[in-house]
Amino acid sequence: MSWESINSKDLLSIPPSQNLSATRLLTSPDGSRYLLENSSDLCHLDESFSRLAGYGSSPDVGSRSAWASQALLRSGSVISCFLSCQQSLRQYIAKRKIERGRRLYEQNNQTEAVRTWRSALKGTCQREDCFQLLGYLYQAHMDWGKFREAIEFSHQQLGISEELDSPNMRAETYLNLSRAHASLGGLERSLSYARHSLYNECGTKCRSGLVHLTVARVYLEMGGFSRALEGLQGAYKIATAIGDPSLELQVYVALSELFGRLQDNDKSATYASKAYDLSRSLQLGDLNSCHHRAALLRMAVSLRKQGELGDAQDYCKEATKLSLISGDQATYTRSIRVMGDIYRKKMDMDRAFRQYEQAMGTSASLGDRMAQMEAMDGAARCLETLRLQNKICNCRPLEFNTRLLEVASSIGAKMCL
Image (cartoon, rainbow, N blue to C red):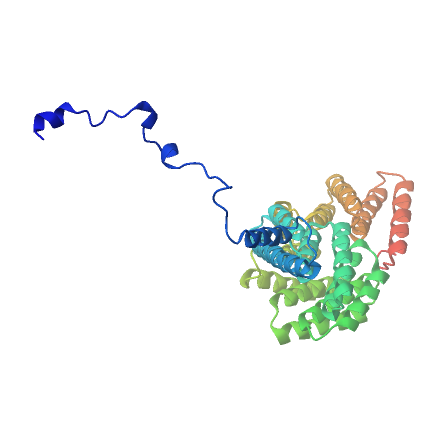
């Protein structure tokens, strides 16, 4: 065969009917010609799979239950693992929010700190963490002077302490309730809660010192000076034993107030100076802590009684400014009342009475009956001075003193009677 003959043939010329394709090469199966062997095994496999999936019926009920139970166990373990991981993640986020709120509060960003704690309270499931968050919210509202809201948080704490049957939690909750009710003027109820706190106390000396301090403040308002002094001595011993500067500072403030009411102005000024120096020298958070504001206000009161009105006014203005920055309405109310005392000492009765009126309005909105009583006492003294100067009639001081007597009698306070 020559090359010409090969070239002359069209080797690629295949009839159209014989074109190669995938469908041409793979012919369709014919079930009648190609019977599958062991087809019954495939049917059994199909039935087994259907039973596992939950379809169809089978006479072997025990086998089906075993397969289904194993499948449910596997799916249940996956769901429980997912829920556990979700709960752990929520708890981790809640703990991070707790720490973030503490940092914000120390940076005088109290509003944002409270918002963060409230968000963490919604996300946490641990009862201990809920109790801790409620304690932070209680203290923040106490620092703001919102005593009614603080009592609500304390009642929630009490429910958790009863649920967990924790004596330490109950002791802390009863102490919180005692402090809040004392600020609202519920002196007898405050003493009752303080006794419950001591009964549930399990060795936490700092809390015992705060209970003694709270009891001393209540007896101070009730005129029991000897019992108040005993309570302050007990709190001071605990503060020095455990090295708690915050508790020691609060004891100095209370001692200054005690000797001030006993008309011992020198001792009152001495303890006020100790409290102020301690608030500045030790690291108690920062210079805008509630303890520092209390020390400033105590210095203003002591200096006013000693006749140093200029210095007293400076301390009072500083306390007022810091209380406005931090949102401490309780300290703000007392600071404007002390400023009224300073103006009254300067015989500026018009400005003094305006300060007292503002303090009475603010304390009434807060429900702080102790601060309201103190402001009413100052206003009554101011009106009495105006009466002696023949600037007003006798009826106004009499009316004011009658209202003051009613408020003091309702809360059990004897200092204004």
